[in-house]
Length: 259
Ligand SMILES: *C/C=C(C)/C=C/C=C(C)/C=C/C1=C(C)CCCC1(C)C
Image (tube, rainbow, N blue to C red):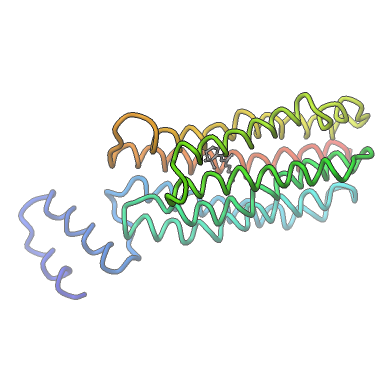
């Protein structure tokens, strides 16, 4: 491990230095090199997930009682993401490849939790059937398992994509036009209404980034290291919006009701 460090001292060019830096980071697995822009976005996302988690944990005490559980779930979502990002960042720095498995260990918990969130917001202000909850929960798991099976090659990538898309489209349909959408129209509370609308936007517009990434990697035009970098940067930003901003939307709705 001392060898590359000694070698760096008399390096002729900047390019060689960069190369050696990346060699060192691969060897130790701990150093985030200055060249590694994608690695930096992993690390930034990791830090922000921690900040969100602490914020929700502390602010949880100041929201009205019926909103406390929602803020707790928002805190769990960013907390679990924080934990997974520790490993994702490490995996990227060492391998310079997508930390696919850790993405799914994260999604498999955080996505169903966000579905729970929908239910909690609605049931805080109106009567919601339990079957709706289980329908949405099950569909979100099918969506993710489909994608996962496609990515590990247990089914064809196209088959995984179709299963995933079917699940996601069902969820979007349900929250806009199905039972879920119908209930939200009747909700009296302005705060719950606005929280629900934001979450709707996140599940429809915010979530579309993930199948787009899957499509680009496996079904789109020829895939290169650069497109893998782009996909990971986009995923990292999308996670901050879909998990962090998602929590903030709930928090601010809760606070308008407190006033
Ligand atoms: C915090 C992480 C979130 C909100 C992750 C969401 C992930 C998805 C909505 C993934 C969806 C997929 C499809 C719709 C089809 C292809 C396979 C997936 C799993 C990438």
